[in-house]
Length: 582
Image (cartoon, rainbow, N blue to C red; front, side):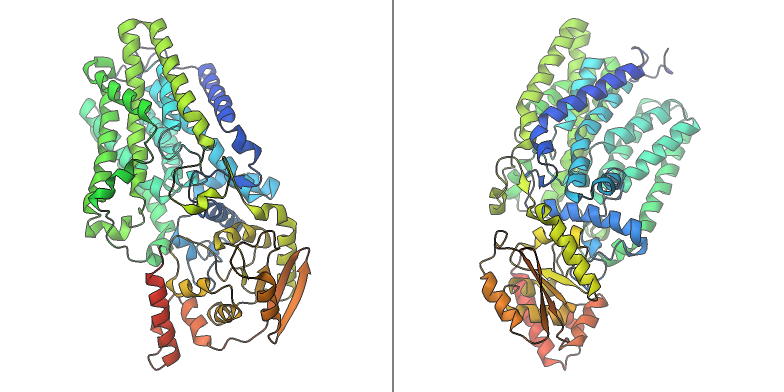
């Protein structure tokens, strides 16, 4: 059985069978289950520390909120209940919609968002490896070279060490979409067109980061296909463009609130002497880089010329764009759309995609020159070296310069609220029974309150996000005082204050003193929930214009100039906001 015989695709080799595909998938699943066994063991209550500590609870909360909104009130998706009453708070990040295919059923079955988020991240490893393996097999590479290429890609930059930021960068999509593109090029049957369209749509809705990376990959691969074989070029381009426009239009329509609410981005550059920092995700990936460099030898072998060439093109696009943005910044015309790409080093995922193809070509070159058995032994040695050097690092903390990364121990970052889920559910029940209203949890970092909110399900008067509303900078700095909570009553109509138990209290504020000062004020009521204390505030807001302004999505500077107190407040907030990192 053979394909059309186009160079660079299967034809010289036997087509992969379903049994072979199943064996490959099972092997990846078992291998990554071994690599992540420590992660799996704590998945119900912890996250891996491969990213800054605030990001893990934040991504978990995003996944929970999107699932919650889609099953209760889809029209409120972008109006995420943090920094109440500020609208469209989900637009400060991304919706991670495609991850709901895994997250939502696991969350529905377990009622544990931490576990569900971990399942999304854990499954991304074998899925990325398997998709890369199938793509390399479709390009004509043998089983050993393809399998090691898939392993190299799954253990690439931004995936080692492991983190719960992986839903923002689901590496399964670039090889899966390109595999569907290759199949569509070989035989444009309706089923293959639908498969390409579906995978492209899921990739675009995975995250805005991944949407851009996949579009760049598809554009690069389409250009390479046209350079290789111009037969039916017009029809092929029409299919790719037509499906691409349809999927992009769906994403654009869905993202209109996101585009309207995003703040105007500034220049995205870094000083040249900081460029070495861009290399941190690839440090320790020397073997992958060596295999990729060796794979350029495929350019001189007829059967491997196309995969080696397109792999090199992907490396050039990823690395070139990364250096361009790092040194020159985004051009003005691109900032309104691509200003979200703040962590531009994630372009290394595209570079890693090309490197994995080149790595497969390097091992296949050995097969062509030395024969099947020696080639299989070299591929096995390369695979063992990759597994030995990178596999154990999935559950090793990243070398971030973040002091809070010391908190989680060697291989996991615990979310303390998971042990108190029942108490938080009870807190939510009491708050809703007593009339609802926004809530703030004091005494712990605000990013930790994000996971807690997945159980009490109350709107937060504070919280954590990547683009904070500037009017909250000063307030969050004063949450440890009764006066700061009074300010939140004016800003957010704060109704509930949660005092976690002393075992979780981490702020340099005396818990009992703050609780005593708050209860000494009129119109307060105390509820004890286990070792938690819930305080209801019934003080009417003293400055209603503040809340109305924020609820309309406007800054406090829009208040009337004659409001001297608001002007003073605005200046103080601007000074505080300028001193805070975003």
